[in-house]
Length: 336
Image (cartoon, rainbow, N blue to C red; front, side, top):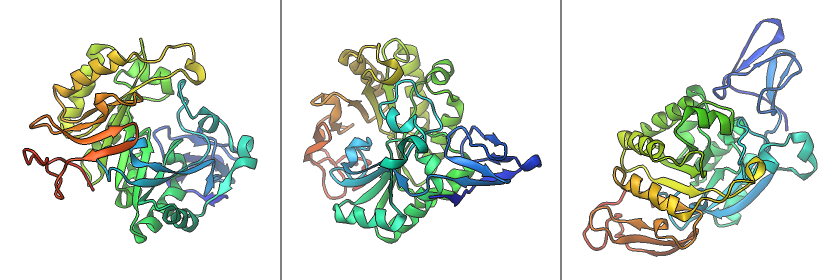
C-alpha cells in the first residue's frame, strides 16, 4: 500500500530529503532512498510498504529479547521488507536485503486495525515490529501503535537504533519498550558490518534512556570481530554511565548470509563477556545458548534466581507482586 510519507523536506529540482533515519537520503525524482521503500514522486515522498508484512507471528516476549518487560507474555510480531542497514551477518537477510518487488507475491496486508485484532485473537498482550528494521515502516508502525494503545496492548520496537530524533519524538509517546541491537563498540567494525555509523546509534540509546520507555540492549558477539576485552569493557562502561539497571544481552553468533564462513561464538566467549558486564551492570544475559545460566535473572543483592528460564520459556518467577526478591526483598526493575 502506498501512502504519503512523514518526516521529509522538499528540495530544489524536485528532490526530497528524507529525515526518517540518519542517512538523510537526498532522493531525486522517481528514485528511492537507501532503504528502497521510500520513493520520490514529483517532489513528494511516499512510503511503498505501508501495511505490507513479510512475516507475522505470535512470539514469546523473551524472543525479542526483552527479559524485564512483561515476562512470560506473548507479543504479536510483524516485519516488512528491506532495511536501512546492510548487515553482513543478518539472519533475516531474505527479507531485510530484498526488495518489495522480489517478495510482492508473498506479502500480506495488515492494516493497523487488523493487526491489533489478530493480536487479541492470538491472546497476545502486545504488538512488536521486528524481524527487519521497523523504522522504514514508520508511518505504519506509528498508526498501529496508536490503535494498540487504545486497545490496551503494549508496543515494542526491535531496532538498529538509526532513527532520527524527529522520528523518535513522533513515535515515543506510543512506544512502551525498545530493544536496540548495538552490534559492537568500534566505529570501524560497526561501519564494516552494517554500512552505518555507531555514534548515531549511541545517541539514540541515550535519548531512549531518558524517556519513560523500557530499554534493553543486544550485543551479538562475532568471533575475531567485536569480541576484544577492551571493546567489551568500553561498551559496558558506557552502558553503566547511562543506567546500571539496563539489561544487556550478549548473544551468540551463528554463521549466516555473507559471514557464513565464521564459526559460531564459543560459549566461553559469552561467559567472559558476561563476567565483564557484571562488574558494572546488574543484569547481563547470555543469548542463543539454551540452558545457559546466563538466561536467568538473578537478584543483584542476594544472588539468587528470581526468574528461571530455558530458552524463551519461563520456568519459574520468584518475585513478590511488587517485583521484590522473595528471599531478601530487593526491588527488581521489571515491568509486569
